[in-house]
Length: 346
Ligand SMILES: NC(=O)c1ccc[n+]([C@@H]2O[C@H](COP(=O)([O-])OP(=O)(O)OC[C@H]3O[C@@H](n4cnc5c(N)ncnc54)[C@H](OP(=O)(O)O)[C@@H]3O)[C@@H](O)[C@H]2O)c1
View 1: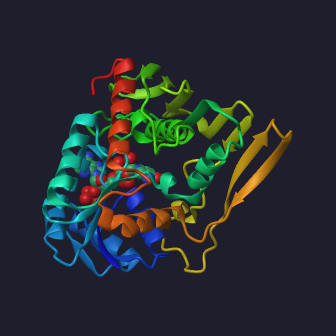
View 2: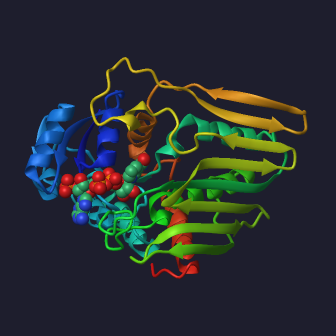
């Protein structure tokens, strides 16, 4: 049983703590906020025994084994490194940091202090990704040739919100484009029997708004195994969430690539413990066999419970197969390249 401490009790921290209600691998022992009353309210909401009015106080609690850093992205590095120095294992929200260079210092901190570190790409912890890898490696769609993935939504422009404010790490690429990049790298790797591949070429276009962050961005990637990917993200129109893999003998379509099976995502209140978790679906269209099959991936937990369990089950290894340190660094490198290509400083 891991004793967790949560740093930054905002939107996603509510979802994670809800997910923790459905696990037997750990419990939330404490929450820390820059504002004491926010920590207290959050603790009351989720029945968390301890709350702290500073992050430092949380890190000084010797009973905490693992810290979940759920602040906005520019603050991930500072608190991840301080948590590692306090000998805590760390799960850090995506993106690990705001650029590759700071991500390297975070990985070094985990290595030096001999603690676990994972970037919280929860979709990588869900069984549908493992199923997709199996389908690819079993040759169900022949040779993988092309990948298309997108994640984008319409957010009202607000220069002070974390989505549009540059100092707060704004822009679609860092917020949700990171999913599309990590998906393409995962699929290209699966086709090569590797955990991931990094692209050998990145070309991109985008629209940078008045606050200096990307509102729309699309990139094409090429991998060493000749696979080409198209990835897209926006924060000013709804392009939805799609992930499709095209092969020489068919396609794999994942209708809910990023947020499958997650009732926890829909509420800030604690969910009843008998909440059912919906299975996810993968559509396999085999031109080799001339048939379309809807594959059901059964689950027994929430998406965010899978993520917490991924951490608990791999603590001793210091990194988890869902998102290894090299995988994260490769993704951060790609996000830098994508933003540089559209004229943003990283
Ligand atoms: N995995 C997912 O599905 C998912 C979904 C949404 C977001 N995320 C990621 O989770 C992180 C947090 O996102 P969120 O939507 O939860 O953010 P949020 O609610 O706006 O903020 C989270 C926490 O960050 C701290 N914070 C906010 N503004 C700050 C500022 N200007 N300066 C310093 N600290 C500030 C606050 O902590 P205090 O209470 O201590 O002040 C706040 O509670 C982001 O990195 C995001 O990419 C992941």
